[in-house]
Structures are given as C-alpha cells and as structure tokens.
Length: 401
Image 1: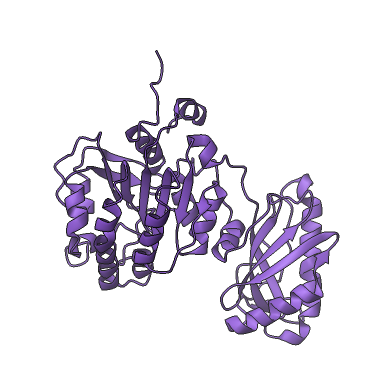
Image 2 (image 1 turned 60 degrees about the vertical axis):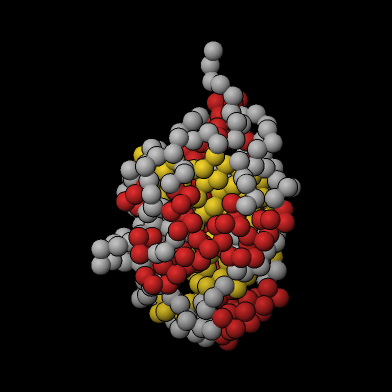
C-alpha cells in the first residue's frame, strides 16, 4: 500500500472521468464444474475484458473474509485495518441514519428476561417488525434522554434495532452488554478504559430504565446491546484525491459508507437500469463515480446459483449504456466474493478489469475468476485499485527525481 502522505503529495487534478463499478458478491466457487460467472452469458463483460488489463484482487488480505465496510473502504483507497468501522455504525448506516461525529451507535436486540435476571430468549420470540416499531416508538416517547445524554432508538427487522447516544465525551471502548447465549444472566457493559467509565454508567442506567418500562411488553421486556462504535476519524475522499466524487447505490448501507468518505449521494431508483440512468444524468457533474449493484450478493447469500447467474447477466446487459458514456478510466470488480456454495461472504479474490487508453491488454478472453488470474495485473490488494485508477486518469505525478 502506498503511504497516505506520499499518495496525497502525488495527486494532481485533471478533467478525466473515473468510474468504479462494484458488483457486490462478484466472485464464486464452482458448482458442477463452473462458477456463476463461468455459467453466465456475459458477452459484453467478456468483450471488455479482452480489451482490458485484468487480474484478481483480495479485499483485505489472504484468507480474510471481509464485511462490506472494510471491503469498500479498501476499494476507496483506505487501509481497512486503520479505518475500522464498528458494527454499531454499520447497523446505523444500514437503516439509513445520518450520524454526527460524536454519536455513539450500537446494535440491539429486544429480548426476554425472567424474574431472576436470566435471559431466556435473546430474540424475544422474534417479534414482528411492526411490533418492533411500536415498542421503539413507545421507548422514544418514554426515554428521550438519560443522564444528560440524548438517546434515539430506531427499529430494524423483527427483534433488531439501533440505539444512538448523543452527548459530549462519549467513548466506544466498551464491552458488549449481551451474554451472547440464552440461559445466562443479563449483564451491563464494562468500560475498557478509565475514560469510558461515565459512558458505561449512562448505558447501563439506560438499560435498567428500559427494562423497567418494558415490563408490560413481554416477551420483549429487556434489551441487549453490542458493537458500540463511533464514526472513525477519516479523511474525505475529495480532499485526499482532488476528486469531485459521487455514489449511486440502492441500499442505505452503501450510501452511508460513501457518505462517510465524503461522496455526494445521488438519488436513484431501485433497479440496475435506473442506477445507470442516474449515472447518465449526472455524468458531467463529477470526476469519480462509485456505481454499486447489489443483486449478485443477495442471490449468493441465498445459496441460489441460478439467481446469481441471472443477476450477473442483468449487469452485463446494461454495460453498453455505461460504455457509451466513455469514461476515461473504468474499473469493474466486486467488494468481496459471495459464492452460492457457501451462502456467505468468503475470502476468495475477485475478478478485476481496468479499461483506459493507457493499459496493455492481456490475453484474457472471459471475465471469470480463472481467466482473470492469468491477467497482466496478477493478484493484488484492493487498496491499490484507486491509485491504479488515478494513474490511468493521469492524476498522479512522478514520484522522486
């Protein structure tokens, strides 16, 4: 990885247009001899690969299965080990919340506690999402603040929610207030530093107050909190790379991730074609675009090989419209692999292609895992993608004399 201060010193501003297309969950594993990409009919992607420099990228490092947060930060050129996004912040972004710098976010469950203080069901019988909304609305009305700290509670799906504590001096170095298993005694959070002592007292006092007012709401008569986190101190992408950057994504989490690094969020519809139309409308307005397609990842997590193939073919069909915009630099890759065989994210590298005036096309003929591993770029970390794009956009000056 290029040291941040070196990269920043090399960046220059030009008129080149850079487009990063992220096909979520792109990589796969063979089922009956073929991966989803190998089984898909993707003539446009194959044709582009034959004119591009190709390779494989590791989202984080060898053997590390990434979450969506660190894998995207790496693609945006940030060291995912240095700029770690905690689970509470990720959950907040996932439901579309806009956090302030000093907010403390945490993911939560409604749960069932007995008279002896034992957690008998960590998911409160998987209450309905509608019931969750009712309870969150009740709690927001009953407990707007605690010990001088504002508290906001936002419903998720079924028993899940996000809580945000807003006040001065809050710390996130706290243990989970969750025994993690049924049959164990409920517990509060424990501070991991002296500075976090006051925050722990506020959180634990809030949990006790909530448990008191939730008595009539059995089985959702207490809460469990885990993943306390704050927005990391992170330099803005536009300042770092001298770019006017914008993001096009349908899911709140990915819009939130882009917002964290300073991208402008462009409003779009729910379909792939609507996303491409948004790109076309705004193509003159920005230097760098992040375009995110979600469907392949969803199919992979469902273990639905055929649906993932179909989703990849849908991406292929919109590629001609993207190419007609004539970006100076085009990258197509994935944030992580989601093989339908595993029904989850995996540690496998993703296919990668880079197209510009200044590349040396290799002998790759198909945009697949096995073909791209023979490409000129070989196998490299995702954090180096942005410098490659900047170089091909003539946005990096010479290093050294």
